[in-house]
Image (tube, rainbow, N blue to C red):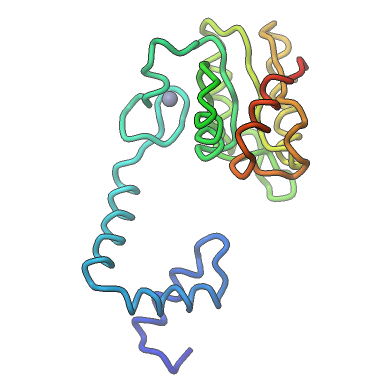
Length: 198
Ligand code: ZN
C-alpha cells in the first residue's frame, strides 16, 4: 500500500468500507477513478452527495424518496388498504416493476436477525403497527425467504393477528435464500398471486 500516493490510499480505504467491496475491488475502483476524466469524477461525487443529502424516508411507508410523501403513497388511485411489507426500497422497486400490484408498501429497512443483533426495534416495525390503526384490510408480507426474512414474517404475523387484519405471506415461488430484487417479474407475480393467509 505504501507504494501508492497517500490520496489513493485514502480513496482505497474509503471504498473498501462499502458493502461487497473487498481490498482488491477497492484498489481496482480507485485506479479506475484515477483514469476517469475529471468532470466525470465530479459528476460521480456530486451525485453521491446530492442523493445522500436530498433523499429522505417517506413519512408514510418509509421508502427512500425526494418528497415528504413518496409518489406511491401520494397516489389516490392506489389501494391504501392493502399494504405489502418489504425489506428495502430495492424490493419495492422489484414489485413496482411488475406493474400488477396496486396496493401500497411498507419498507422495513432490514430484517430481524438475532445473529447480527438486529431486533424488532431496529427496523421500521413500530411504524407499520401505527399504520394499521387506519383502514387496512390486508398486510402482505413479502420479506425475503432467507432465515432473517422468515423470522421477520413470523414475528410480524404474530403481532398483527390479534388486530383481526388479514395477514398473508407471498408464496414460495421465491427460492429459499433468494433476494427479491434478483428475481424475475413472472416469479414475483406468481409469488404474490399464490400468497397464503397466515
Ligand atoms: Zn410512501
